[in-house]
Amino acid sequence: MTSHRQARVLAIALQKGGVGKTTTATNLAVELTLLGLKVLLIDLDQQANATQGLGIELGSDDATMYEVLHEDRSERVALTEVIKASTHGPDVAPGDLALRKLERTGLGAGGQARLARELDALTGYDIVVIDCPPSLGELTTAAIAAADSVLATVSPGADELKALVGLGNTVLDVQEGLNADVDIHFVLVTNFDGRTQLAKDVRKNLRRDWPDEYLGEISQTIRVGEATAKQIPVSLHAPSSTAAGDYKRTARQIAERMKINV
Image (cartoon, rainbow, N blue to C red; front, top):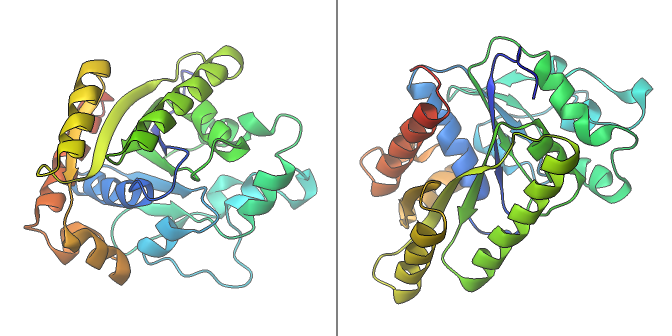
């Protein structure tokens, strides 16, 4: 990692859908903003749910992260050119469906380090949150290569624990060739229902295997789904809900552990 970079960079990843990754990315970005930080959310998922979840509407001529990471230099634009302000606090570097082309064809020579170079030149932000696609392809690798820390979101289930192992292996690969300093510094359980034995077992296993990284749980509540459907953060939709409180606590933990002054 370069020493002159201004912002800390957090990649939120797991190669499995339905684990609350995008919901966590958007809500943490909002809560970090509410702590007084200047936040950029980068959406690398072709579904662009993080973009939409923060109310960003794209015009036909708007560039996205697809152009930022494009293999062809003549088609490429700077990260700063795609950033848009949201009404909920964080700025957003939007994703769109075109990103699936990059997942399929690759980023080309030097492509996995392209995002890191863009972030090295970025100023004006305290933290950058990257919402990764639910796979371990080149986009997720590029995000991890650009990150200071990785946050793994784990929804209670055996497959998710296996996915966490897979993510760990990808991080090790990135450490060897692209970013020796990055690691999974945070593990968060999402959709947590403490009434079920499965959820209790997953929590027990994570506390045992990831004692320093474990951040706790985001409570399962219908309020999160309602907020997602309305494309607003849960802290705005249901500020007194358990999940809103969980995201607020988690955001503060991350800011403190990443040594970002709030």
